[in-house]
Length: 445
Image (cartoon, rainbow, N blue to C red; front, top):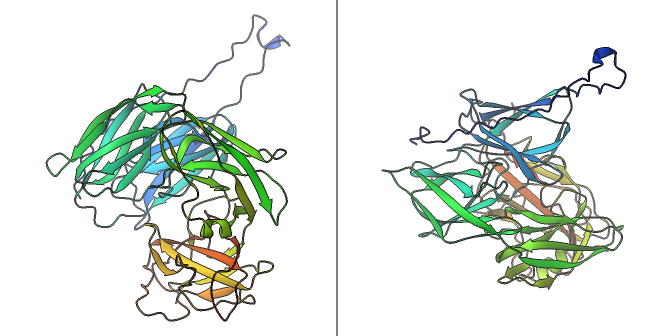
């Protein structure tokens, strides 16, 4: 695909370091303050997962983990590299590039990492090549005024397909990999609303468009409620509002529940439609899957004017996935042992039957899962089973997993019976951000 990066605006973000100046007493003055430690250095190298070649002009946005605020942004150089000088702390990244899947992929959240004073941390990010992107361009833009950390959404006027990215600390954003066409744009963040309609168009004659999205402060609405812990000790979990189409988290609309009062409150919600979720993070808890299955659409919320809505959540302990799965602290896919992987987990108490599902990162279920009427799309998996191979029941028409591609598997525990294989009471599931794996390119010898 032809790439026109000559139009890409490279914004230099200079980090100002505060220099402590010694007093008139010089080095011998005991009252002189100690010099600050040298900053830590984060080196990010972005490469293609196909051949490990560098991916230049990748848009790298760095966030402070505690408040999810974008701090720095830069484009990778010809070697696919950017450097950030940082104070000691916890951070995470969002990376996108033309012709590649973003990291994290849509619907997933980034996992924080720690940068220490006077230390250099190198992170290599492998992006997966997108297929069939020959008729795609990108949109450059700014949030006006230049406010950081907006979720930028683009909806195709012709196909209604949705795409998302994030703005950096300078308000700049890039929406890569948009098929040719015209798009309606939106910018979402707690406490702000877009001032009016904004659109962008790209074509074979003009593969890039540049836009400005005007926003204003907005009081917004409030979502509040309580959290009940089922079959597990009381704790604290995140309550998060998500864009229902892209499954991207709305900046500023995630809070932690109170461990004492078991309640939560999200303020400054812009008008719009959202999906509410509890315990999106990998923390050992999941939303009560029985309630989710029996109340479809129960977490869909709409806000049109400043007001208050209430929503209660029930969470329970999650099923522990063993392999193949990413660890709890990263969303980097785990390399499976085989092109036909064996899925392993730990037994969950009181389970009579397990249900499994494998899907691609477009959200398509490839094998397994549950129908709306409770029927199961695979053979029976009893309580004494703790592993199955992909398509163990030999269903015809189930697609093979493609070498090099990324998938996710989920597991549910139920109090059903072998005779009916019908959902009676789902008692747990695996976590939303676990079970991410990649199929090896070559089978083991």
